Length: 417
Image (cartoon, rainbow, N blue to C red; front, side, top):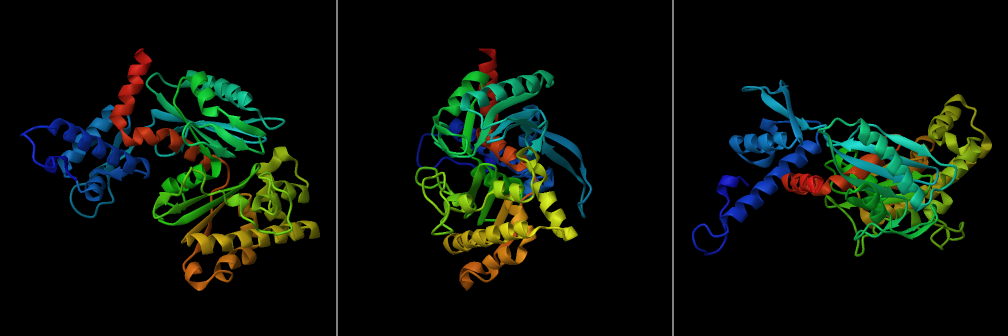
């Protein structure tokens, strides 16, 4: 809605509450424009005008304010327009950053991420064992100190987003349980905030990955999709339904790694048995190709290379076939229960889909009821951990995207005090 057309509802004295309504509308419009620019590769003023329904002068004023705040930059004209004068392009600004953190059993990932999902300088700090919560705080503090010292003076870090391989209390960022890390009731958000003097938001790593897929990846503009990620800590998932990330009653929806896929299966860290993440593991694949853990990033290339050359061992083929069949059981359950139009597979689950496509894709095309499986497709998430870090940054950027001017004013006031 254009700010010039906003009218207070109900009967009241002339001008009563008008300032508040105008402020609220302005905040909403700033948030809308920044959100569109953030989630795109760049938009022209003309595109912003068409998408928002605001008039050109209002868009110009909003963009001008966002430029002054350092949140967007104006660049070259959009030459793709077929008619009329070329419009100025608006891109995410590079100087407002979030610190993204992803602790795992063998490393702690840390990166500064700019608006638009642009990773500035990722660091993967390898550990000889699963790090404790205090060790993660110390590692992040040391890495961030080096990063912050190298930043230009006008760059600002607005917060920290943490992707955790475990259950996280959405209210205060306490890690309720991360079995692979050996954590229970760890106040990670509070300790990081104390150490770095920045606001901190934490969430499950696969849920964070789903947010990134929705904003920048395969799930962009897809209303109903499921993201499944396999990593060192197991398998996690995130569900987007009706265009919104599913949280559940207490914030723990999407624990897809704990779907039952084998009734007489292996013991799981959750206390049950036969869960997807207990049966389908990265470690078993590493053993099958005789790769050490510190070379896990080469796993996909190694497996697919052996298949392409015809040198895959019988053991490797058996492991892949069994894991693919069990993943297919889980995917059939997802299709029946969630009815997505898209399933995105990330991490080492990509390998199963690439090496055993008939088994994995058959779970969707043949193994589900016709109504649920129609128009369901499977796509692979990009290689690497970068999308998890981008998703973690989204946690930190959420308040800024909701109230751009207000958050930056508050941050400036905090620095002055």
